[in-house]
Length: 518
Image (tube, rainbow, N blue to C red; front, side, top):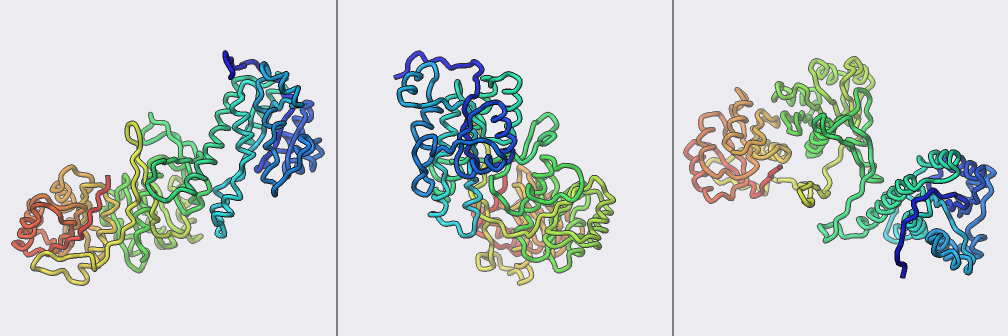
């Protein structure tokens, strides 16, 4: 048992290095630099060959340990001569190392094959995934990162030049450098293990919940200028999303840009027919579906042109010259589409600050886990990917809606899922005409949606994301022109609300399902 341990914080000299990397970026320069400094280099497999290819002298680990790589390469670096050389405390284990012919290894350079790339393969099954789990690499990295007093560890090719420069200047590596490298190394293995854990665990809300992301980009600031921010991305995520979008022009995306664009994309994914979504502050303010992209855009924008100013325009079909000309007449922050014609891009190029995002094919929403931070932890839920159907709707009033009304209701419900609660949406002919979002009382949301609707309220449908607790909202819309109300139902006063609809000649339909969004 070790007692009175003291961490060595002195500079250390690098006499021997062990190199075993998947990412061979910068490897020739590192090898030449270490060789020039007189460092003995041990290496394995492809790393050793890559170094020999540039005339760097290398000793194979199997020659060094006098033990061959066995079991199809599963066992090659897990050996007392290797692990002892990395883990040993120079001021305590010197005689033990000498008695067992163990030589100190002062620098470990190792990075791991991206497990996320393996599991992203179409032919990947559990056997292939497990075969690609690295054992020796993480063991070396963790050993070196643990023995921070005597060993330096590099997992990022971006650190090669700094190490060579530091050794050149000081003939040694400082404790401060070793400490930073150790932290990065533990992060590397933690991320690697988390990806494996998440792949193997049941896709549910398990007792253990881990997340791992890599920095995608720095941001000037967050929601407000005094808040620091950065974007992070799941390793190996090649899906069509905002972070993977091609930005044809415009300034770098801000925190708020990404939030708004993602909200627009999420809503857009609800529709297979030609659709346009206009978003402001993460709320849809205009949505329309139809057959012609130009017509759909004009209807979505005009649904609330005041709110659309400085907003996000998202469409699920190619943006052509006619659409780009119409969009260019107004000020918006972002235009998002699966693709753009050359003519459309030429037109947009005249508006230098406009961000133009090509997202690729827009596919339906997938059920993933949504995560929110709360003080002391996180809360997690499944994404709402439910699709309301005609068969789930229940008419509860004397007056029945028409088939056309039902089609419009189903459109409205898809949009309503993306509006902040309390959410009230007024729709007409597969286009939103009034959005009342984010109010603390439902009747206030009704007021706002009605005001936004203007003259378009005649023969429209009102959709509510939760039940009406009182009949006041129904009394308010009486004689407004709204002919159908869609709501979940479930209030203790449902009968009063239904009676109000019957009194005013309004049809009411229950979904039996709520769609709160906080």
